[in-house]
Length: 123
Image (tube, rainbow, N blue to C red; front, side, top):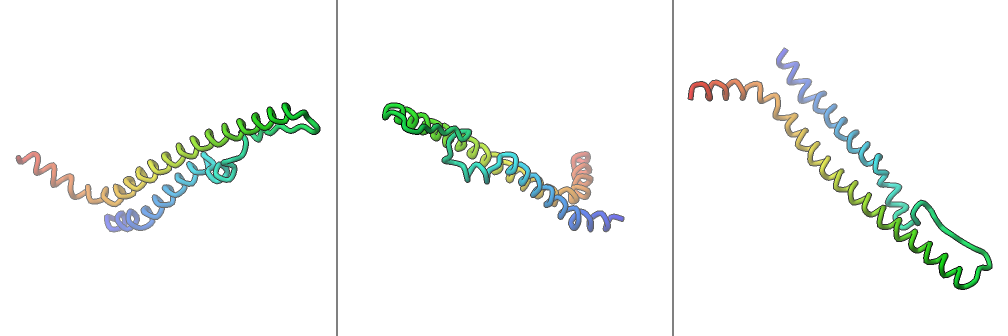
């Protein structure tokens, strides 16, 4: 029974934990929609573009200013969201990596903890 436990833990269990870690990373990346954010990085915010036909020069300049402001807001906000997403993914990757290392160590605790308990009691 003990060998079956170790066989599952370091075989199928380890494989499943990798799959769960990959799924979590994919879901977080999908939550932030990184692919869409990068593709539309320099697009106007909420696609708010104004245009006018045969407008006076002063009105055309105002439209350009508003479109430029919308584009600038889009760049800034998307940059912030991309930065938060990258930081979140990096933190999560480190956390999942530590979790997978701990997954490898936990079965050894079956043997280490009783020895440690005896050592502490007899000290």
